[in-house]
Amino acid sequence: MNIGVYGTLVAASLVLLLGNRLLAALPLLRKWTIPEPVAGGLVVALVLFGLHTFVHVDVRFDASLQAPLMLAFFATIGLNANLASLKSGGPMLVRFLAVVIGLLVLQNVVGIGLALAMRVDPLFGLLGGSVSLAGGHGTGAAWGKVFTEHHGLQSATEAAIACATFGLVMGGILGGPVAQHLLKRIGHTDNTADADAPADAPYAFEEPKAEQATTPAVFIETLTLIAISLAAGDVIAGWIAGTPFELPGFVCTLFIAVLLANTLAFMGRPVAEHAVALIGNVSLALFLAMALMTLRLWDLAALALPVFSILVAQTVMMVLYALFVTFPVMGRNYDAVVLSAGHCGFGLGATPTAIANMQAVTARFGHSHLAFLVVPMVAAFFIDIANAIVIKLFLALPFFA
Image 1 (cartoon, rainbow, N blue to C red):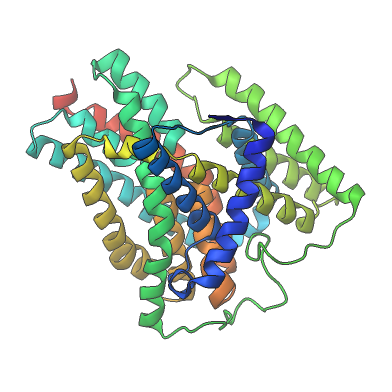
Image 2 (image 1 turned 30 degrees about the horizontal axis):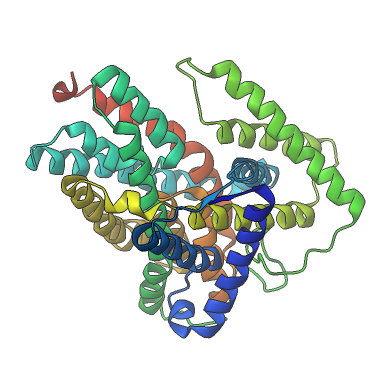
């Protein structure tokens, strides 16, 4: 059964409404601060899994809107990245980047170590490490192709996609419970706002359900900036494709958006934060809904036992790392809790998952300007560069020769 682009958009919208109703009806989901797109999307994914398994009917959605929505989201992150603000949060950004790089290395050490212990190709350890988890579907597919063409690893791309899918699911599920556990440590309760972030001054992405006052003219101006970022980012991605400087397309889009925003700010024409937040939050919600409702859960069921074992170990390690490394290193306070929830999101899944995790936490417990300043830039920009370097260093090890 094939669902067209308009039907897919309708389905994604219904997924968000379903997630909203589920959170309203099930206190357990609210308690563990599960994001609405994750709640609704997983229910739909499970229904489709049942249709595939028991009725032998596959429902295929048109994914043509998914990539533009993701790129639009990253463009809004870039438009929201004021370099003066980043400078003020620089020390914490550097500290968080060091924590993130530590996880990248550890993911690959664990993955390769378990692969060798189970006597399977250590390349599967990399696929079940930072390649597909911190890297996500795009990075996983790209490296999977390299592993097949240059290292002879068959079905590497399929395994990478399945690993990334597992990570996306677990990243969206675990962020809330980890935050809930850490909040008990610091004695933080519902609706307690951060002392450094007044309730009437939310950061752009902190309140996705808040009304954003804007006008048609401002909305169109912001949409134009986003479109320029997507178009120019696509051109740059094409220029550097196949070179040592190759980066995912969304990083190029983000880079152009940062340049645009800060050039306009220097000229005394700052971007309209309310319009940026409105478009960004809508793009994020619809992208996540589409990504989760189109999960092929039967691909996860088909994972070989060694790869599945590696992914389970990585999930446990991510939780322990967030609890015992990310949280204490980042200050053992409320900001550190939100950062830890975000780290679970992109450490296993993707940047949109990290933002959704943080939004679910701050919606209940108060703003965290620092987290929404640091995580988007680290998760959307620096991590891909760091991950590429880490992966290439591991590939230089003797048993990959």
